Length: 65
Image (tube, rainbow, N blue to C red; front, side, top):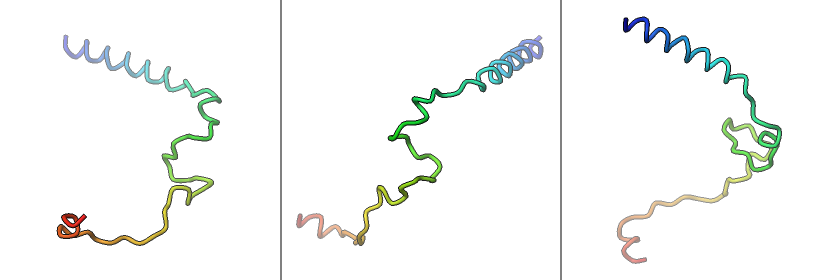
């Protein structure tokens, strides 16, 4: 009985997954300027990179500040 119930749930969930996978975002959502760059390929690669040097801060320097 459990196999039948869980099998039916699996079939229904696969059916819903494949039906919903055809849904696509609208062009208004896809073609905007402030999209999150999730894959690292960007037109302006150095947009958020700040050039400079890093230095270590010790506990004594923290107490002085």
